[in-house]
Amino acid sequence: MSVLNIAEVTKTFSGGTNAVDRFSLDVAGGELVCLLGPSGSGKSTLLRMVGGFEQPTGGRITIDGEDVTHLPPERRPTGMVFQSHALWTHMNVFKNVAFGLRLRRMPAKQIREKVEAVLELVGLAGYGDRMTTQLSGGQQQRVALARSLVLEPKILLLDEPFASLDQHLRERLRDEVRDIQQRLGITTLFVTHGQDEALSMADRIVVIANGRAEQIGRPDAVYRDPKTPFVAGFIGLMNLIEGEVKNGHFIRSEFTTPLPIADGPATLAIRPEALDLTASNAPTARVHRVTDYGSHGLVDLDLADGTRLKSTVANLDLFQAGQGVGLLPRAVAAYRENQQIYRS
Amino acid sequence: MSEIVERAALPLAQTATSRRPIGLLLVAMPVLLVIWLVIWPAINAISRTVWRTDVNGNAGFDLSSYAFFFSDTYSLGNLAVTLWTTLVCAVLLLVISLPIALYLRFSRGRLPAYVQALAILPMFVPSIILAFAFIRVLGPNGMLDILLNALGLPKIRTPYLTPWGPVIGLVWDNTPLTVLILLSGLGGVANQAIEAARDVGANAIRVFWHIILPRISNSILVALSFSVLGIFSSFTLPYLLGPASPEMLGPFMQRTLRDVQDPIGAMTQAVVAFGFCILFGLFYVRSVARNRGNR
Ligand SMILES: Nc1ncnc2c1ncn2[C@@H]1O[C@H](COP(=O)(O)OP(=O)(O)OP(=O)(O)O)[C@@H](O)[C@H]1O
Ligand SMILES: [Mg+2]
Image: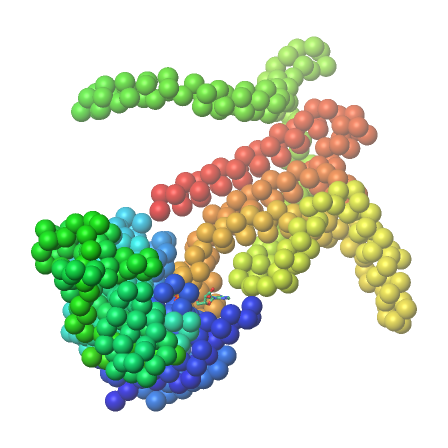
């Protein structure tokens, strides 16, 4: 059963920016959906429309079957966690979390119980009396999360909540949020421009570019089978090569590989881990640089016309800068006119 | 225990001060100026009003000028009208400036820029000009009367030369500074903090009361102390727009000094006014310190 339905939603700002363009999405109960896209792609705008902070200029948003498109934020069953600066610094942690319950005129005893339970849930038991300015960045975001969770919203909205935290803390918090989300079974929309975050947390990923959904799917599917060149280039490392197809062969500079599609221009996509390097008497590429990442090595290659490619290799010692190599793709996808037309 | 702390703290403090002679110099300048221009004349005035020479030439401690001030109904009436004017102005300033500041802070687009320019305009109009504009518009047979007359309506009872005259002038005069101070306070309230409040169910009034007001209470305090101190000791507007009796302390002092030629009486009035201003100041300092403590 879908809890959140976004139908053909559009947002054009007064300046003329088309931030979100006929965007549609169905989110099932208990699902965590990541909105993933580059800066300025309209992720925040979309989330803010679900929360009621921006008015769509077109389309409809329904939550549990109820049309909320024109409801103000205070009347929507949504809870939002902002990127930062959203705690009320004149209140301590307890009052921050209790504020929403107080507005609902809940008895004080019940408020105390609920707040303490939710602080425990986010790992801040006993922090109620602290002022928010005495907390670390990670703790502040936990308070913000607790403040939303305590009201038991139907939909939890998170807009890059960990963007201002360091890498380690970010990873820990994202695991914790995922745990809490699954334990409570709360429907969640999560905005990020970090693909790691999206791939590791999400039930489904929506890749957004220019206010449109480029692809919607499970993380592994989006990674393995990107449907547009944009998604292919955006998720994970990818070699995207523009070239021509002639007689069943893709050609770019000296590099050719069989590609059974009609003649014409095409974009070929090969993951670095699916591009093998071979010793060759007639090399098609030259090693530019070799980088050791510990667990694996990455070889940067140049085609004769300067096109830069990447290949993941297990044994670095076989390669050095300047060396000529042959290229042997194990799996490719091809795109034409922004559509996938072939996948091996 | 405290000895240890002191011994430990002393070298630190010494190096800190010796490293910052410029800082000390910067502080010393205003402190010396305040002593020279404010504290010394104040002490001087106070001593001259309480240490006086009687008709026989004997100097002695004498509170009679204060006894007179606080028993004379005319003086007390003037003090009362001064306090009343100050209080009414403070309330009106807040009631007028806060909505303007809120509007300027939270609306977008081109219109707020014009509103802001309009709200700040009175700052650039000298009090004298303002007073005469007031008289031409609101005075007897002023523009308003002419307008009402043309419409066949009865004349208004003009506020000119009533206690409301100075109130209107002073509120107009002090609005820009009050708006600017409140606006800077509102600048410290993050949009996301407000959106978060709406998100948990607070409507506009609740957001204002629970989120915005506590965050700008200091700015309100600063704005009000600035205007209250200025209004309490104002001269030009009450002199030009106010009634002859009761009059505010500013014109009262001037008249006592020039027309009545009673310097001791004038000084006594000044000391009383100074005392009230110090009271306001103390209240301000205490509130700010308490707010700081809460942070
Ligand atoms: N209030 C606004 N008025 C006008 N244009 C806006 C407004 N808010 C956002 N935009 C524009 O809408 C587009 C989408 O912005 P949005 O904030 O949704 O992007 P985003 O995907 O969240 O980016 P980021 O990852 O940097 O946060 C941008 O081009 C932005 O400039
Ligand atoms: Mg954003």
